[in-house]
Amino acid sequence: MKHEPSTKTPESLAFSGEEASVVMDADDIRKAIRRIAHEIIEQNKDLKRLVIAGIPTRGKIIAQRIVSHIAEIEGVSPSLGVVDVSMHRDDLSTRARVSMLELTELPLDFDGRPLVLIDDVLFTGRSCRAAMDAVASFGRPSRIQLAALVDRGHRELPIRADFIGKNVPTATTDRIRVRFEQLDGVPDSVTLIRTSTPSR
Image 1 (cartoon, rainbow, N blue to C red):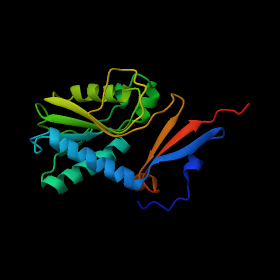
Image 2: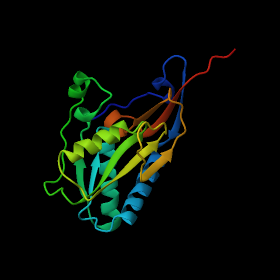
Image 3: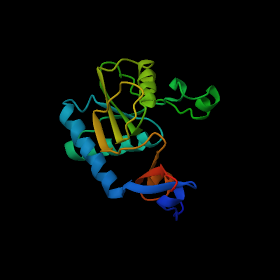
Image 4: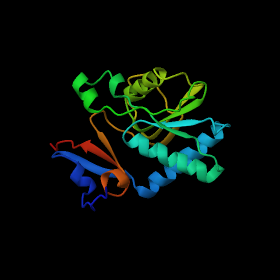
């Protein structure tokens, strides 16, 4: 399905009383993902056994790009997977979890292989914890590493990313919006949306 060109601007993502600013453009995202791919290569010697799994939806796209970069750099393609976290989230209603449900796809010989989980935005850590719960229901990797395009802080669980594209300081009331052209029909970008402080 071909996306029609969009005229949306960063400002159009914000509601009344909010301010939007682009913190990563398409070139920034490309460089960050390529750097993460290099760092994954440095920390994983056996790339043939490596599994790189994205958390839907945008983590899946990032995972695909990382695998492509590794194949281009090393001539070896790690296994690509998807880890659906919907049924393992503790901050969503049952109805919401079912509506978000996607299939988890991991190699059949998954046990004992290193795994890198990929998410677009690392925030409270609950999605990543849910991803690890989902992984545990399928098998036991030799180790799990975590990569995120954006780390915005405010963790509620003791979870830290091994690979980070960009640290973006935020308030808990802020929002981060990641958009990819292949999914959203607009140029790749990361937008920070802040609640405006009323003037006195």
